[in-house]
Image (cartoon, rainbow, N blue to C red; front, side):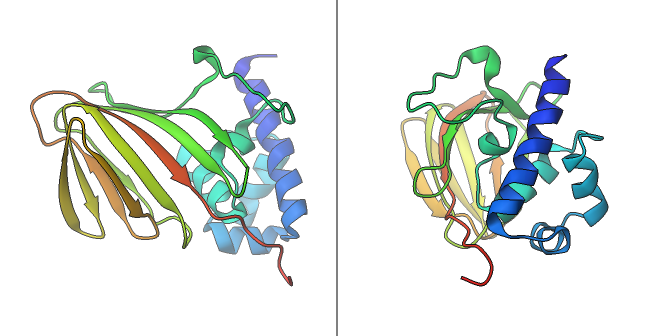
Length: 194
């Protein structure tokens, strides 16, 4: 079994499990995530590899981290994530990238990500569920963080936090690559009817 096959099987198993735990029908999850019912069926039957955007929308709708949906294994109290098991979520031909380093479900999903943005590159993020908070620290270069249409320049050595339920963009307007570490805290989703 290839890594892609293993990832497809894990995503199918985990999506079905979390949809069941949340008590969501296919239609309810489709409506919450903005993903078609047919796509969810294909994912749960391991017949497709969805885009990162679709996977993020499903994770947000379920109130779990993308790590949880992609995890091969669950349950260890201490979990080490070697570099070869970290998940590249986004990249561009220019060399920019975003890598999910590690995540947890404790008190709602928390994800830790590493970003590398080349000059002139940007990444648009759709609004996350209400209550989602992002924290970031720029380690080199300069990030332009646009939150709900307002640009904020974040130079190396500076940290920022914001509520991420509005559209936001990570942009490198500078002439040097920008590197940052980001944590995303997503509120837990309650089962319907509770």
